[in-house]
Length: 317
Image (cartoon, rainbow, N blue to C red):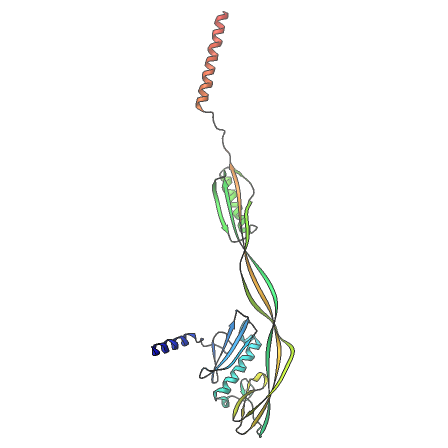
């Protein structure tokens, strides 16, 4: 049972692993970096982006969630790109391969060590706080049914269209229905609206990043003392790697600047308006002829009258 459970767990982990990225800055996949991998995951439900760095043993060495929704490619999203490069530097620092990094000029890179018993290094980081502006967007959908009724009962035309009544498609259908009634020798009215209703179909929330370079004026400086041998991230946005020599003391001064991630918090609501229109037509009808029994009665009365008239003539003569 334990072996079966282990196999199932291993299969689950393999299936859950993200695919390999084609480029370094790409969402929802695993990008290889020195000593491990970096994964960028968009969190659509919260409008955030998570960046996780794993070493070769799949241990998490970097995990940062930014209140910045993905927009386009990750490379065009500057804070996300900075976080990825920072993750790459930390993965390299934790992998034991940091000494193989190139000299600084690209990132991540190996920062030079000036030597000495005590060395002071500097680094910067950026943090972000969301600043949301609610925005409401309405989307209208339509369902319009057009019918043509002859003499109050016979439906000679009926169609439903996913557009409003004023749309040219429906207006063309009105002409078609009129043509059918005309062919039936009917007189007809203009379309009459017999029902209409509007109902909310659903709402969806999305976030649109409008800025990420405005400082909150919240700047924090901290210093961390590290005794060698050790590997630490230094430099701008901690994208450089510094090797602290054995017996050496490093004092790293880090300055963190907090920025606003200004976002439009967009709520899109979709409404469906359902309407029905009817064209009523009446065909020309001939007068109903008199029943045969009445015709016979009238004929009989005429004959009786004629005989009475002839009798009067005879009496006079």
